[in-house]
Image (cartoon, rainbow, N blue to C red; front, side, top):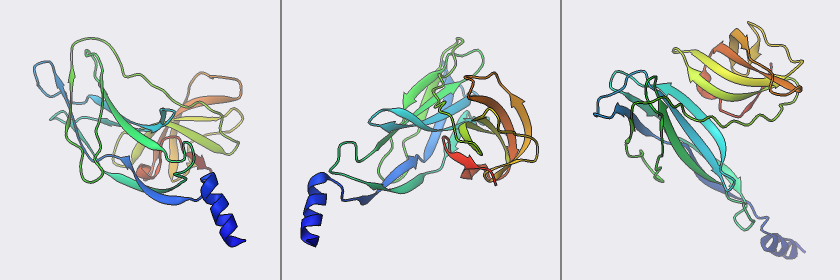
Length: 218
């Protein structure tokens, strides 16, 4: 009987296995103007896209230094996959977009090797007025939770979050959002009746907060 169960599981593709995936690449993104001069304080948005449906799965927002550079550290994760099932193994791709006042934004895919750092990515911005496009998941989170749409580092332990919460869910200074504590709230217009968005400034170990996660209130 045990052999029969295993055989049926194999035929149905239900045998799981663990695979390692790169969840954030390691490397440097450099932002320059048309003449090759570095652009300081440019906004670099690194997007992680999940396949096969190519939906935005995560994002990180960082400003360039005086050299026009930002650096990212590599993150890996082991996931349970079902290799014999259709779409049983996800794929991930990475896209970097840079924007700065007075320039047209530039977006390019960033190659990620199986091991080690990615090659440096140079984004040349021409004069213009175009910002990076934003694609976020506005699905309604359950009560008592908040869905993080974007994270921007303001200071060493200060983070600005774009969040969606149920309409009747209160958010105020001092309220915890996962590992972070709210220090400022700016409400935005409601997208639909069921929920509303807010820009929330927080303090805490923001590297533990991932785009798209549901953060349970403690």
